[in-house]
Length: 273
Image (cartoon, helix red, strand yellow):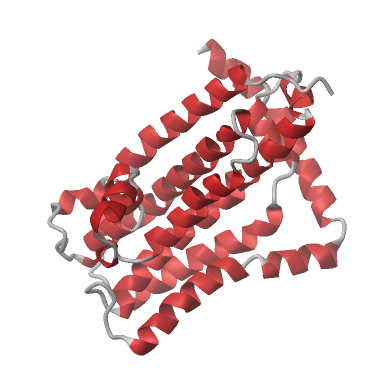
Protein backbone atom coordinates (compact mmCIF):
# COMPACT_ATOMS: atom_id res chain seq x y z
CA UNK A 1 0.00 0.00 0.00
CA UNK A 2 2.78 2.37 0.95
CA UNK A 3 4.59 1.60 -2.32
CA UNK A 4 1.51 2.42 -4.40
CA UNK A 5 0.99 5.65 -2.45
CA UNK A 6 4.60 6.60 -3.18
CA UNK A 7 4.15 5.84 -6.89
CA UNK A 8 0.97 7.95 -7.08
CA UNK A 9 2.83 10.89 -5.57
CA UNK A 10 5.32 10.70 -8.44
CA UNK A 11 2.57 10.70 -11.11
CA UNK A 12 2.62 14.53 -11.55
CA UNK A 13 6.35 14.35 -12.37
CA UNK A 14 5.72 11.73 -15.08
CA UNK A 15 2.84 13.81 -16.50
CA UNK A 16 5.13 16.85 -16.58
CA UNK A 17 7.69 14.85 -18.60
CA UNK A 18 4.94 13.74 -21.00
CA UNK A 19 3.61 17.27 -21.45
CA UNK A 20 7.13 18.52 -22.09
CA UNK A 21 7.65 15.88 -24.77
CA UNK A 22 4.33 16.70 -26.41
CA UNK A 23 5.12 20.42 -26.51
CA UNK A 24 8.65 19.96 -27.85
CA UNK A 25 7.63 17.48 -30.57
CA UNK A 26 4.66 19.57 -31.67
CA UNK A 27 6.66 22.81 -31.86
CA UNK A 28 7.53 22.19 -35.51
CA UNK A 29 4.03 21.34 -36.65
CA UNK A 30 4.74 20.56 -40.29
CA UNK A 31 7.56 18.20 -39.37
CA UNK A 32 5.40 16.56 -36.70
CA UNK A 33 2.51 15.98 -39.13
CA UNK A 34 4.89 14.54 -41.75
CA UNK A 35 6.32 12.19 -39.11
CA UNK A 36 2.83 11.16 -38.05
CA UNK A 37 1.83 10.24 -41.59
CA UNK A 38 5.11 8.58 -42.57
CA UNK A 39 5.04 6.35 -39.49
CA UNK A 40 1.94 4.62 -40.81
CA UNK A 41 4.15 3.19 -43.56
CA UNK A 42 5.54 0.15 -41.71
CA UNK A 43 2.12 -1.17 -40.68
CA UNK A 44 0.64 -0.33 -44.07
CA UNK A 45 3.38 -2.34 -45.78
CA UNK A 46 2.55 -5.37 -43.60
CA UNK A 47 -1.05 -5.18 -44.74
CA UNK A 48 -0.11 -4.61 -48.39
CA UNK A 49 2.28 -7.57 -48.31
CA UNK A 50 -0.47 -9.94 -47.20
CA UNK A 51 -2.90 -8.53 -49.77
CA UNK A 52 -0.29 -9.01 -52.52
CA UNK A 53 0.18 -12.64 -51.46
CA UNK A 54 -3.52 -13.24 -51.90
CA UNK A 55 -3.34 -11.86 -55.42
CA UNK A 56 -1.54 -15.08 -56.41
CA UNK A 57 -3.20 -17.60 -54.10
CA UNK A 58 -6.66 -18.20 -52.68
CA UNK A 59 -5.39 -19.64 -49.39
CA UNK A 60 -2.41 -19.15 -47.14
CA UNK A 61 -1.76 -22.01 -44.74
CA UNK A 62 -5.39 -23.10 -45.11
CA UNK A 63 -6.87 -19.63 -44.45
CA UNK A 64 -8.51 -17.27 -46.93
CA UNK A 65 -7.81 -13.56 -47.24
CA UNK A 66 -10.53 -12.42 -44.84
CA UNK A 67 -9.43 -14.87 -42.12
CA UNK A 68 -5.76 -13.98 -42.57
CA UNK A 69 -6.59 -10.27 -42.30
CA UNK A 70 -8.09 -10.85 -38.84
CA UNK A 71 -4.67 -12.17 -37.76
CA UNK A 72 -2.96 -9.22 -39.44
CA UNK A 73 -5.29 -6.81 -37.62
CA UNK A 74 -4.73 -8.38 -34.20
CA UNK A 75 -0.96 -8.39 -34.68
CA UNK A 76 -0.82 -4.84 -36.08
CA UNK A 77 -2.98 -3.34 -33.32
CA UNK A 78 -0.99 -5.04 -30.57
CA UNK A 79 2.47 -4.28 -31.95
CA UNK A 80 1.74 -0.65 -32.86
CA UNK A 81 0.40 0.06 -29.36
CA UNK A 82 3.46 -1.55 -27.75
CA UNK A 83 5.83 0.30 -30.08
CA UNK A 84 4.19 3.61 -29.18
CA UNK A 85 4.30 2.95 -25.43
CA UNK A 86 7.72 1.33 -24.92
CA UNK A 87 9.45 1.06 -28.32
CA UNK A 88 11.65 3.94 -27.22
CA UNK A 89 13.37 1.65 -24.70
CA UNK A 90 15.69 0.73 -27.57
CA UNK A 91 17.62 3.94 -26.77
CA UNK A 92 18.88 2.18 -23.65
CA UNK A 93 22.06 0.94 -25.32
CA UNK A 94 22.96 4.54 -26.24
CA UNK A 95 22.43 5.62 -22.63
CA UNK A 96 24.52 2.73 -21.30
CA UNK A 97 27.35 3.30 -23.78
CA UNK A 98 27.57 7.05 -23.12
CA UNK A 99 26.96 6.91 -19.37
CA UNK A 100 23.81 9.05 -19.67
CA UNK A 101 21.98 6.40 -17.68
CA UNK A 102 23.75 7.72 -14.57
CA UNK A 103 21.66 10.91 -14.75
CA UNK A 104 18.51 8.83 -15.03
CA UNK A 105 19.33 6.62 -12.05
CA UNK A 106 20.11 9.45 -9.64
CA UNK A 107 16.68 11.05 -10.05
CA UNK A 108 13.93 10.14 -7.56
CA UNK A 109 11.83 8.54 -10.33
CA UNK A 110 11.66 5.10 -11.88
CA UNK A 111 14.43 4.54 -14.44
CA UNK A 112 12.23 2.79 -17.01
CA UNK A 113 9.36 5.34 -17.01
CA UNK A 114 11.92 8.13 -17.36
CA UNK A 115 13.57 6.47 -20.37
CA UNK A 116 10.22 6.01 -22.04
CA UNK A 117 8.93 9.53 -21.36
CA UNK A 118 12.15 11.44 -22.06
CA UNK A 119 11.88 10.77 -25.78
CA UNK A 120 8.40 9.32 -26.23
CA UNK A 121 7.86 8.95 -30.00
CA UNK A 122 4.41 10.56 -30.24
CA UNK A 123 4.79 10.44 -34.04
CA UNK A 124 4.02 6.71 -33.72
CA UNK A 125 0.50 7.51 -32.50
CA UNK A 126 -0.76 7.48 -36.08
CA UNK A 127 0.63 3.95 -36.52
CA UNK A 128 -1.26 2.79 -33.41
CA UNK A 129 -4.48 4.33 -34.73
CA UNK A 130 -3.91 2.75 -38.13
CA UNK A 131 -3.27 -0.67 -36.55
CA UNK A 132 -6.53 -0.44 -34.60
CA UNK A 133 -8.35 0.62 -37.79
CA UNK A 134 -6.97 -2.40 -39.66
CA UNK A 135 -8.32 -4.67 -36.92
CA UNK A 136 -11.78 -3.06 -36.99
CA UNK A 137 -11.99 -3.30 -40.79
CA UNK A 138 -10.83 -6.95 -40.73
CA UNK A 139 -13.39 -7.89 -38.07
CA UNK A 140 -16.19 -6.18 -39.99
CA UNK A 141 -15.14 -7.87 -43.24
CA UNK A 142 -15.07 -11.28 -41.50
CA UNK A 143 -18.82 -10.88 -40.82
CA UNK A 144 -18.59 -12.61 -37.43
CA UNK A 145 -21.60 -13.73 -35.44
CA UNK A 146 -20.97 -11.41 -32.51
CA UNK A 147 -21.55 -12.60 -28.97
CA UNK A 148 -20.52 -10.95 -25.67
CA UNK A 149 -17.65 -13.42 -25.50
CA UNK A 150 -16.36 -12.51 -28.96
CA UNK A 151 -16.62 -8.78 -28.20
CA UNK A 152 -14.61 -9.30 -25.02
CA UNK A 153 -12.04 -11.39 -26.88
CA UNK A 154 -11.71 -8.79 -29.67
CA UNK A 155 -10.97 -6.09 -27.07
CA UNK A 156 -8.83 -8.18 -24.71
CA UNK A 157 -6.57 -9.76 -27.33
CA UNK A 158 -4.91 -6.58 -28.70
CA UNK A 159 -4.37 -5.33 -25.13
CA UNK A 160 -2.76 -8.59 -24.06
CA UNK A 161 -0.74 -8.64 -27.29
CA UNK A 162 0.49 -5.09 -26.60
CA UNK A 163 1.64 -6.16 -23.11
CA UNK A 164 3.37 -9.19 -24.64
CA UNK A 165 5.20 -7.17 -27.31
CA UNK A 166 6.09 -4.49 -24.73
CA UNK A 167 7.65 -7.22 -22.60
CA UNK A 168 9.73 -8.37 -25.56
CA UNK A 169 10.87 -4.78 -26.15
CA UNK A 170 11.95 -4.33 -22.52
CA UNK A 171 13.55 -7.76 -22.12
CA UNK A 172 15.61 -7.53 -25.32
CA UNK A 173 16.62 -3.91 -24.65
CA UNK A 174 17.80 -4.96 -21.18
CA UNK A 175 20.45 -7.13 -22.85
CA UNK A 176 22.31 -3.84 -23.35
CA UNK A 177 23.32 -3.94 -19.69
CA UNK A 178 25.53 -6.94 -20.52
CA UNK A 179 25.98 -6.63 -24.32
CA UNK A 180 25.74 -3.10 -25.69
CA UNK A 181 25.64 -4.11 -29.34
CA UNK A 182 22.71 -6.48 -28.84
CA UNK A 183 20.38 -4.33 -30.93
CA UNK A 184 20.22 -6.69 -33.91
CA UNK A 185 19.47 -9.63 -31.63
CA UNK A 186 16.71 -7.66 -29.96
CA UNK A 187 15.19 -6.66 -33.31
CA UNK A 188 15.07 -10.32 -34.35
CA UNK A 189 12.60 -10.96 -31.53
CA UNK A 190 10.64 -7.67 -31.60
CA UNK A 191 10.19 -6.95 -35.31
CA UNK A 192 10.75 -10.61 -36.22
CA UNK A 193 8.05 -11.57 -33.75
CA UNK A 194 5.69 -9.03 -35.29
CA UNK A 195 6.26 -10.55 -38.73
CA UNK A 196 5.82 -14.05 -37.31
CA UNK A 197 2.41 -13.23 -35.80
CA UNK A 198 1.17 -11.62 -39.02
CA UNK A 199 0.75 -14.98 -40.77
CA UNK A 200 -1.12 -18.19 -39.81
CA UNK A 201 0.99 -20.60 -37.74
CA UNK A 202 0.29 -23.28 -40.35
CA UNK A 203 2.71 -21.66 -42.81
CA UNK A 204 5.57 -22.48 -40.42
CA UNK A 205 6.75 -25.93 -39.45
CA UNK A 206 9.17 -27.97 -37.36
CA UNK A 207 11.32 -26.57 -34.59
CA UNK A 208 10.87 -22.99 -35.86
CA UNK A 209 7.11 -23.05 -35.23
CA UNK A 210 7.53 -24.91 -31.94
CA UNK A 211 10.11 -22.43 -30.64
CA UNK A 212 8.44 -19.16 -31.66
CA UNK A 213 4.75 -20.07 -31.47
CA UNK A 214 4.73 -22.18 -28.31
CA UNK A 215 8.14 -21.82 -26.63
CA UNK A 216 8.14 -18.00 -26.79
CA UNK A 217 4.37 -17.54 -26.97
CA UNK A 218 4.00 -15.63 -30.25
CA UNK A 219 1.32 -18.08 -31.41
CA UNK A 220 -1.09 -16.73 -28.79
CA UNK A 221 -0.87 -13.08 -29.87
CA UNK A 222 -3.00 -13.33 -33.03
CA UNK A 223 -3.33 -16.84 -34.47
CA UNK A 224 -5.22 -18.63 -31.70
CA UNK A 225 -7.41 -15.63 -30.74
CA UNK A 226 -8.28 -15.28 -34.45
CA UNK A 227 -9.37 -18.92 -34.57
CA UNK A 228 -11.64 -18.36 -31.57
CA UNK A 229 -13.14 -15.22 -33.16
CA UNK A 230 -13.67 -16.98 -36.49
CA UNK A 231 -15.11 -20.09 -34.83
CA UNK A 232 -12.57 -22.33 -36.54
CA UNK A 233 -10.95 -25.45 -35.12
CA UNK A 234 -7.15 -25.41 -34.92
CA UNK A 235 -5.60 -27.38 -37.82
CA UNK A 236 -2.64 -28.00 -35.49
CA UNK A 237 -4.84 -29.74 -32.93
CA UNK A 238 -4.97 -27.46 -29.87
CA UNK A 239 -8.34 -27.04 -28.10
CA UNK A 240 -10.64 -24.02 -28.61
CA UNK A 241 -10.03 -22.50 -25.16
CA UNK A 242 -6.44 -21.74 -26.19
CA UNK A 243 -7.86 -18.75 -28.07
CA UNK A 244 -8.32 -17.08 -24.67
CA UNK A 245 -4.76 -17.74 -23.52
CA UNK A 246 -3.29 -14.39 -24.63
CA UNK A 247 -3.56 -12.70 -21.17
CA UNK A 248 -2.13 -15.84 -19.55
CA UNK A 249 0.90 -15.59 -21.84
CA UNK A 250 1.29 -11.82 -21.54
CA UNK A 251 1.33 -11.79 -17.71
CA UNK A 252 4.36 -14.08 -17.22
CA UNK A 253 6.11 -12.34 -20.14
CA UNK A 254 5.70 -9.01 -18.34
CA UNK A 255 6.96 -10.55 -15.08
CA UNK A 256 10.05 -11.96 -16.84
CA UNK A 257 10.75 -8.64 -18.56
CA UNK A 258 10.46 -6.79 -15.24
CA UNK A 259 12.84 -9.28 -13.64
CA UNK A 260 15.40 -8.94 -16.45
CA UNK A 261 15.16 -5.14 -16.26
CA UNK A 262 15.71 -5.05 -12.48
CA UNK A 263 18.61 -7.49 -12.77
CA UNK A 264 20.14 -5.35 -15.51
CA UNK A 265 19.85 -2.13 -13.49
CA UNK A 266 21.55 -3.81 -10.54
CA UNK A 267 24.26 -5.08 -12.88
CA UNK A 268 24.85 -1.66 -14.46
CA UNK A 269 28.22 -0.06 -13.85
CA UNK A 270 28.81 3.56 -14.77
CA UNK A 271 31.24 4.45 -17.56
CA UNK A 272 32.63 7.13 -15.28
CA UNK A 273 31.98 9.81 -17.89
